[in-house]
Image (cartoon, rainbow, N blue to C red; front, side, top):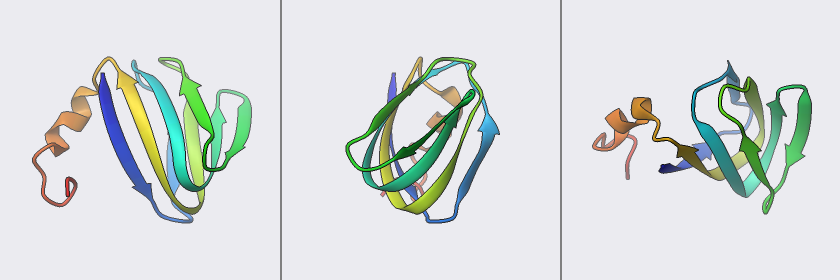
Length: 89
C-alpha cells in the first residue's frame, strides 16, 4: 500500500489511464471532476472515491485542490519520487 498527497492546480487535466492498483482517494480541498469508467462525479471537500484495478479513469481539476490517495498494491512507478527534493517537501 502507498499513500500520497497530491497538490493539483486549477485547469490541470489528468489524462485517461488505468493501472493494476486499486486507488482510493479523499478530497481535502478544492473541486475535481472525476471520470471512472462511464461514471462522472464532481467532488468537493469531504468526498471520497474508489477505483478498482484496471478501470480507465481521468480527472479535470476545477479548482486548486489537495487530495490524499492510497494505492494497493504499491505503485512501483511512484517510488522514484521518494527522495526527489522537488516532489517531497
